[in-house]
Amino acid sequence: MISQVAAGVYSYLPLGWRSLKKIENIIRDEMDKAGGQELSMPVLQPLELWQETGRAQAFGKGLFTLSDRRERKLVLGPTHEEVLTQMVSRNVQSYRDLPLLLYQIQTKFRDEPRPRGGLIRVREFTMKDLYSFDADEEGLDQSYQKMLQAYQNIYNRCGLPNLLVEADSGAIGGKDSHEFIVIAESGEDEVIYCDSCKYAANVDKAESVKDKVDFGEPLPVEEVATPGVATIEGLSAFLKVPQSQTIKAVFYMADGKLTFVVIRGDLEVNETKLKNILRCFELRMATEAEVIEAGIVAGSASPIGISGIKVIADDSVTSGTNFVAGGNKPDTHIKNVNYPRDFKADVVADIARARAREGCPRCGKKLSSTQGIEVGHIFKLGTFLSEKLGAFFIDEKGVSHPIVMGCYGIGLGRLLAAAIEQSHDAKGIIWPMPIAPYHIYLCPLYREGSKVSEVAENLYDELEVGGLEVLLDDREESPGVKFNDADLLGIPIRVTISPRTLEKGSVEVKKRSEKDSQLVPLEEGITERLKDLIRD
Ligand SMILES: [Zn+2]
Image 1 (cartoon, rainbow, N blue to C red):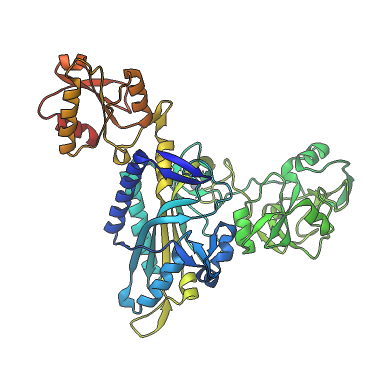
Image 2: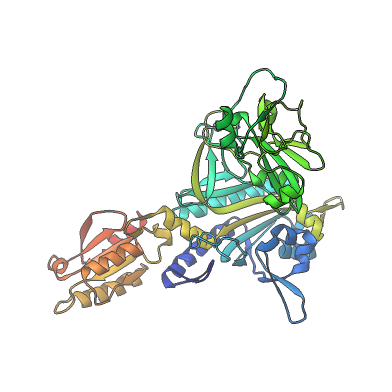
C-alpha cells in the first residue's frame, strides 16, 4: 500500500493510491452535497501571516519553515485558516455574501516530534479542510451541524463505524469541538465515555466526578520525618495512608516560567487542561535543575509557605481533609494539611486526567475508557482569526461585524490506515467494499494445457466492461502463494478459475470476510451476480 521515504513521509503504491482516491471521491461528494465549494490554496505561505495571528508561536516547532533566496521566511502550510481568512477578507463585504463553505483536498506539513504508526502520525499528509464563514453564531451552528452530518455520511460510506466525542478546543478562542474516533486497540487517542447517557470525550477534554475522600475533621498540622521518601508510592507505603490522602507537587515550565501544580496523589495532571488554564504556548515538565534553582526541595516540595511562584491546584485538593504534603526540606513531610487553612493557590480548577470507573459528569454513572484513532475533527473557531486578519462584513443596517468561522478536517491517509486497523485478521486486510482498491481478485490456476487463461481473460474483459474493478493475478505462482496474497491484499471478492471449476462450467467465488466459497455458473449474467455480491 505504502512505502516509507523518511520518518513520517510515505509514498503511496498503486493499490494504496487507488483506495486513497476512493476516499477522496467520497469526501468530495459529501462536501459538495453539503454546499461546500472546492478551491485550491498553496502549500507555501508567508510566515508573517502566521505571526499576525499569533499561531506561529502556538504551532511552535510543529511548523515547517524555510527561507527563500531573498531570506524571506516561508511556511509549509500545516492548515489554511490564515490564507483563506485573508482571501475572504478581500472578497466578502456584505451579509449577502454569507454563509460560505470553502474547502480543498491538499497536502499539509507538520513537523511531528514522534512520527509513527505508518500513516497514523506523519509529517506530510493529504487532508480535506473545509472552513465555514457565517454572519452569526446561529449560522455557525447550522454550518457545524451540516458538517457533522456530512462527516457521518463519509464514515458510513467508507464502512467505518466511529464514535463522536467532545474534543479540546484549545486556549485560543474556540468553542465547541468534536472528534470522530475509530475504536482500535492500536490507537493513540484515549476516549472516556459513559454507557448510560452516551457522554464521550477525548481524554484531553474529558471531565469526571472524582472519587470523594474524607479523612475526618481537620487536625493540627504535624511535621513527620520521612527519610529517603521521594515518591507518592513511597510516602503512601511509609506513612500507611492511601495515595488519595497525599498531595503531589508537579513542576512545569509554562512559556519558560516555573509553575507549581498541586494535585491529589492518586490523580494525574491533564496537561491539555493545564495549558488551557495557563493560556501558554509551550508547556513541559520542569527539570530537576530548574526546580532546585528556584530554591525548592525536589521530592519534598510543598505548597505550604511557598512564595514567588504561581500555584495551580486541582480541585481535588480542596475537597478532602488532613492530607500529607511535602515539608519543603529534605526527608520531611507535613501531615493534616487542609485547604485553604494551610496553603493558598492562585488558581483552583479541574486539571486532572479523567479515568474509567470515576463518575460521569452528566449522569454520575461509572465512566469507561477505550483506545481509538482520531479520523476527523470539527471545530467552532468563532471570530478569533477574522478579527486578527480583518475579515469583516456589513450587516443589513450597515454595521460591521467579524465573520464567524468554523473549520473541519479529515486526514485521508489516516482514514485509510484506520480502516485497515479496524478491519483485518491474521492473514491480512479485509477492505470495506467502498474503499477497496479493487472489487475482485481474479485468480486463474493451473493454466497450462487448459482453457483457464482464455476464460480468465474473457471474464476479466466482461467484468471491466460491466463496471467492476478487477485485479487479474496472472503470475506464474502456486495456488497457495496466490491465495495468501489475495488474503493479504484483502480485495473483497476472490474469483478462482481452474480446470476443476471449468469442468462444472463455473468459477469459485469467495468473499474475503467469509470462510466458505460458492460455485457460480460461467454464463450470461455472471457480471450481475457478482455486482449483487458487491452491493451486499
Ligand atoms: Zn453519563
